[in-house]
Amino acid sequence: MVKHAIILAGGKGERLRPLTDKVPKPMVDILGRPLVEYQVLLLIDQGVEHIVFSCGYKSEVIKEYFGDGSKWGIKFDYAIEEEPLGRGGAFKNALQFIPSDVDLVYGSNGDEVIAESLEPMIELHSSKNAMATIFTVQLVSPFGIVEIDESNKVKGFREKPVLPHWVSAGVYILNRSCIELFPEVGDHEDQVFPELAAQGKIYAYKGNYWGTVNTIKELNKLVSELPKIFPEDLLNRFPV
Image (cartoon, rainbow, N blue to C red):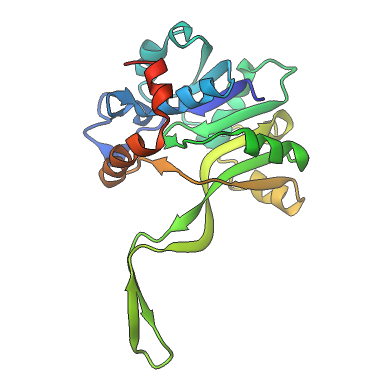
């Protein structure tokens, strides 16, 4: 079980304006709750007891809503960035709030939603002695495709097929020693993750669902999908 988590929650969400004029991207309303609250609820349900929000833009909005965590029965801390540190730098900066004897940390971007148990992912991480494990989902084409034979005859059409590729959902199980390798300023996926991959120390967990909100179109898609995939009993435990 992983009891500590770091959630990156400082995104400006410029493509979502005007929705993000007054709130950071993770606090955009989705069916009456901030987007990041769905992630918080999922973590609580799976035994997480302490969450560090790495905040920058409009950090006061997050602090005002979540407070010390007593409403949810857990502890919240806030790592405030005075200047943008990048995702890797934000994780490393937030590590100061994780007790020094804690080795495993759940990490994520605050604008993601997954809706399944993390236990198999943690088991994979432990069984492989990994330094980092990434939650991945299969890539779905954003477009319909035309199937063409060797003579250029159109054989048929497929609407947004699942492709034979896997993408990172920005959700991780991380060893402390891995986060310590992250840059002070910059992105961990630019250099650290490729180096770990070359050393055989990073693994991928193949998940089933990932929702993200980068555009209004993606927001509307998540609004339509969330009631079908997110555990209703979990929402009922923490009414709005």
